[in-house]
Length: 217
Image (cartoon, rainbow, N blue to C red; front, side):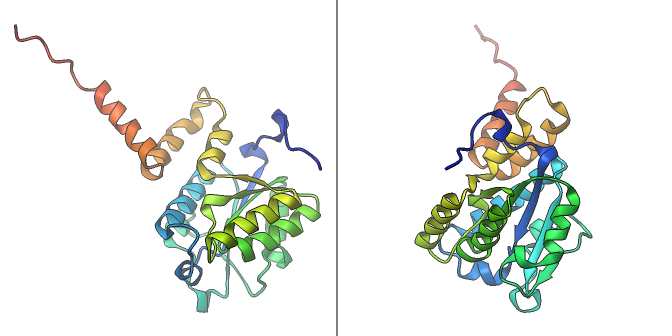
């Protein structure tokens, strides 16, 4: 087994490419591993983080005329961008998607989608076998059951995949708060999508701008 460790193994925005797979209404209706609201929130936050850090993002759906369009919360992040619609269940067998990824010249492949056990697992396992460095963003995925999600994650890890959550990925891309060119954009995402962390930040800003009461005595 090859261990993923060392500074060079951490994800870098300049080397990353993101593929978002089948975040569509049909898949959402039978998503039972996560709160569907959270999956929409997390996948949207992931898309926004990629945009902030300049990470190329490929959007793909499967038979959209029957399964529905990609969530507007995601496509609104990339207005006018083509969504690659497929018939193949395994995204990595669709040449248009692979060509789009390869055209970026990036080597750190990041994947999230619905469902984890089908439309995420298959391309992840194939891409790993072809030598890609693959990371799955588990909380921007979801499956038809808790068991299906967990088994799929275990299967992908056994094949060599790295797993993270969207917030961990964003922090890894940021890496240093001295990199101020992305800090404001990331902070805005935290405010809108990171729940308690975002609210705590807003509270902190409120307190910093609240005058200290003077002693009336």
